[in-house]
Length: 145
Ligand SMILES: [Zn+2]
Image (cartoon, rainbow, N blue to C red; front, side):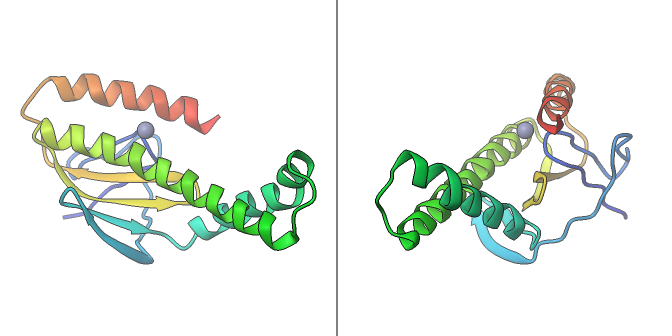
């Protein structure tokens, strides 16, 4: 049985490969389970953390809050990057919890370079999932731009 996964807000199942993108992103680091859902990070997420921290520590923070040490700016940049990742995780958890509530099995969430992936499998026992899936597809298009 093959598993198909796709970027945030576009779900796939074992039976219906995604027409937009079918990619495989593995967990490099496991964060355990949240609400029973396995959560992992891909190494590529480190690039996002470094870019956000560097951007804030070298540009935005020194101009907005002058007079602090370089270390202070970097710590603040790292904290901001971690908060960003936490919000991304909350976003994916919301998708997965809704899917679970609609009877879809959630195999896990992986955060990576381009956002998050919720790995869903099986068939929903409700037509409501079609509506959720369409909303997620629209969101994916908005997020990718
Ligand atoms: Zn989403």
